Figure 1 (cartoon, rainbow, N blue to C red):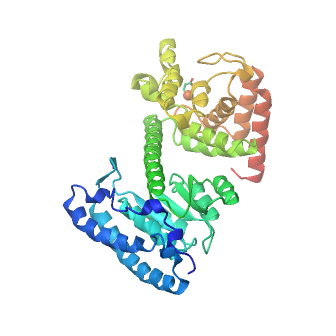
Figure 2 (figure 1 turned 90 degrees about the vertical axis):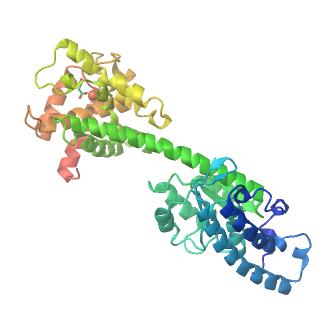
Length: 415
Ligand code: SIN
Ligand code: FE
């Protein structure tokens, strides 16, 4: 080990006990705080000015003995953190936020571990990239502090995998890079890093960045939960309507496949798929007497039914992540010739994703059996839709692409 410990801690790391939140008011934390203080002071001793000028042999001995005390420190800190569960840290209820530190350099890793534990975090560690993704999936830390150069798979790949996985994509990743390593930072941005820190760690900076990203992640989680609530409502509405079966699930699959066929962007495909679940979420505001009526609707009842698009729009409007789906929700009943609702938009005034969505919505309804009708074959359904397109209801070019897509799917049996 050639590095000096002082490479990992900058001068602002001196007064480590100064803001130790665990030392306030909490008898358990007080007790352990003192032990922790001693261990950390011992540990940080080596970073004092002058220590770094020792010869490398005595420095190595110091490092080894301090690494041992760090192990002790580590266990002690984690147990303190565990006992402080739910404790308010710097006015922010961490509810024991968990941070994973991935670094193969023991001294550097332990420094981060010690500093984070001092801030009241539960800290877990890894010294290589191989099992990290699995570990993150299982342990669900609130943040990952990730060194770039680690054995196994490198930090960039780890970050990319985490950001691509539904189960881990909201977990912020801070890369530990060397100061001025511009290339690593650019690569880090490309793979979805949330922030960067350089060695030597500045304790105040580390604490501030970790705290702000953990807070941000918790807000994002709430947002995600809000989305999940919406999807649950949409499913509940679908199950309330005995006519639809698993129409939404099929629309999601069809939207994904047709979106890919049309070479839409990832976000557009995601919006189409979300549209599959959410397009009729506004039916939550339609009374059962109308929504579940067996016979034909009266003109007044149709008026009520048509409100589902505006109701759906206002439900999703407050959620930023829903902005791409809202045009689908509001406009999935417009018609190419302007005879649809709610805004009587014509031609390409109708948002493109709403045009696409309407085609798959109608197609799936036609090929599905309902209590009042038999399922059509794909060929029959396409014939009905071609006749409606000839009447002016749909974009003829898009309709042709859809027919080609369905024919391709059925000839290769990929749907
Ligand atoms: C629906 O959205 O499925 C029913 C309303 C309509 O067909 O216009
Ligand atoms: Fe609808």
